[in-house]
View 1 (tube, rainbow, N blue to C red):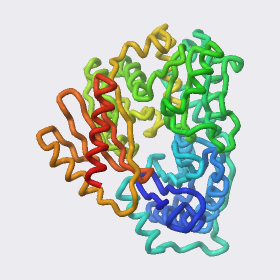
View 2: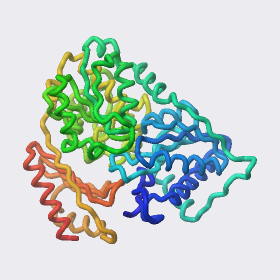
View 3: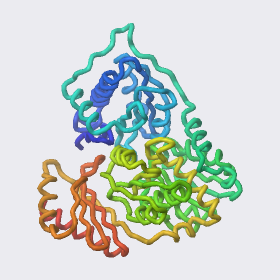
View 4: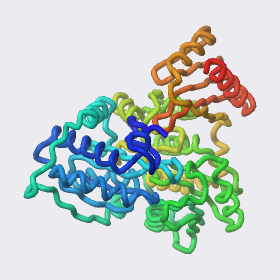
Length: 462
């Protein structure tokens, strides 16, 4: 498996040869490049926050990364087991030069990654990432003399600080949540959601006895595929009925994606996580919204209803954040269950998403199912085709563009084709060697058929 270098970090499978996988040599090389870039940005600030999710390889990779940073003369704040949004906020808490979390997000257990953040606690930009990669390729790093090595401090309170910031957030209403007496089932997928989500729920006033945790052992041995997609959430759906719970919550291993299950065991739909939370925010704050162009058009509907403007962005958290800043969006994110609340921090954050969603439910005095029924039933068919090394993606997209030239086409991020009422988006993944094919329609069969047709077109070109 090729090592993947993108705006989502340096990602690969553990084991095997260097540059073909995420080997120890690669961890050291790319961490040294990142540390060197940080020192070039600010010679006086030599503090970096680093944490990890619950993956099997996490502790090993984190130790390698911390030692490398200290070898450059950088002081490391070891956050231990943490979440991606927590590390993003911790960089701000510590006024650090940057940060890193060891996590491959939704990828299976054999994967891991170095996710890199700047001094604002945001993913480094594509241009800065290119500089980091150039430093790595040229081995342009100089390690510190023995009396100038960096120091390590351990900080285990960042999750609590993150939760307190959420409790203090103006649109989070703890009293209303507590009054509703929610019973909640959480699928923590054997990672740090098992630490952060129950702590948040209790801080929101939900009794410990009303919180049921599935897959709560933090060992990285994921009980199922860790991406919170419908086909992976059957255990959670069944548990809702078994425990007669009010809501089910699923997060991914690093807790930046969020999906809900209704009280009857049916799926709320990860595409509608952002839609519902945006609806609540826009009821209280007029403004604009942003999501990536693979996300449901329901967000646009909700935004226009509240008098705001909706803007699409390229896929990738850093691209969404850039567009949110440009249009001064009050809420944004991605249709994969990624919610970005800018006045808390510019990063996908399942924890603030949970707090805002529960507040909305409590204030509206609705069940999860009743809330879902407010929104239109658009259907997105999500598919992918694995790529073998050597395929010319540009040629594939050129041929498909030629075939569908009579329709509206956007090439800002891969290839998006808009039909009269439906759309399809083709793009290479930032995290896997695949082409993703997303299609949306008012009818499930139509969305599936559009996606199937595109997949056949791709195979014909390949």
